[in-house]
Amino acid sequence: MKQDPYATFIDEAELKRERAKARDLRASQWWKRRCAKGICHYCEKKTRPNELTMDHIVPLVRGGKSTRGNIVPACKACNTRKKNLLPMEWTAYLDRIRRRDGQEI
Image (cartoon, rainbow, N blue to C red; front, top):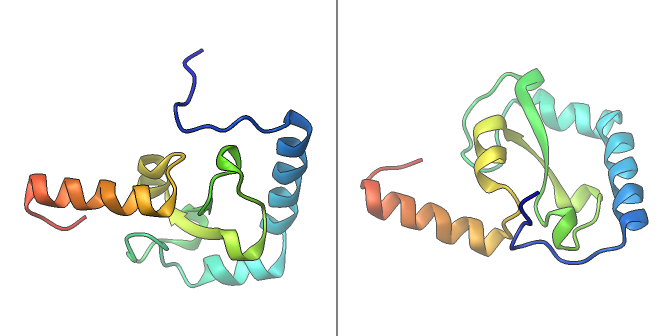
């Protein structure tokens, strides 16, 4: 198994607790209202609410928590590309892509 170079060493029990909190938040009215807007947090594109995924701005493996302030709806494409990047790393990644391709993402 390839190790994530960005992962921090966090306790497996803590990771399980945070994932359980995320599952609870996913079932909450707060999350359902966030998704009902149908907007990806990252690309701001209109997306069907049932196609939005839950993304931790600061990933759990990087020490993030499953709190309302750290969870946003994201389209599958953005969530997949972001992986375990921190916000500043994600912004730098997007800037590199835009410079390389000369286009918006």
